[in-house]
Amino acid sequence: MALIEIKNINKTYEDDGLATTALKDVSFAIEPGDFVAIMGPSGSGKSTLLHILGLLDKHTSGDYFFESKNVSLYSDEELAKIRNEKVGFIFQTFNLLARTTVLENVKLPLLYSKVPEREWDGLAKEALKSVGLSHRLEHGPSELSGGERQRVAIARALIQKPSIIFADEPTGNLDSKSGQTVMEIIQKLNDSGHTVILITHETYTAESAKRIIHLRDGMIESDEKVSNRRNAFEKFVK
Image (cartoon, rainbow, N blue to C red):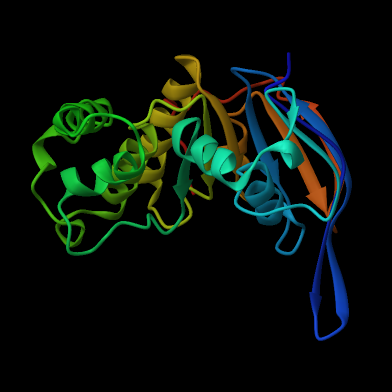
């Protein structure tokens, strides 16, 4: 059973009566445990697609099935619950609260959960341990390197133990060493059973995936399995 399936998805933006099509008849399925990289030049529609798949935006036409249910049948409350409990987001810009400690940043998704507050610290510390930041709990984001901030963002994405991780250019603001560390963590997440959807313009990053979808002008140009998958633990150069 596919975790995600989209059929003939279209997305059109309108501004002052002018319509701009971002996605055109995009169709594919993603199985549980898959690692898919979505690539394409600027303006190809890859970020728009990620926002739709991550339930952050709605498509204009077509069908999107999440866990075999058409998302059009979910209420706004149900969609918010899925985003909070089943989906983890990692963004290029980290999106950390500047005046909040690492531990508090990681706990943020739990504010909207049913997890008892007495368990929050333990879950956040466990998530930070998994990304090698147990020694940074009380530091602020300004005291961290770019790579460490991204690892905090990954820990925050993991706090609810989501089934699927969306990573939008997670190495885009990092040097090669920090980028490699982040990709090692993402590959470990996939190896442990998390489904990963990665948006990237970098070929060496995409080759860590099991499958690469190329977009151009809002359409799928190719959708292929990676025959020589790169091990994220091998050194790469940006």
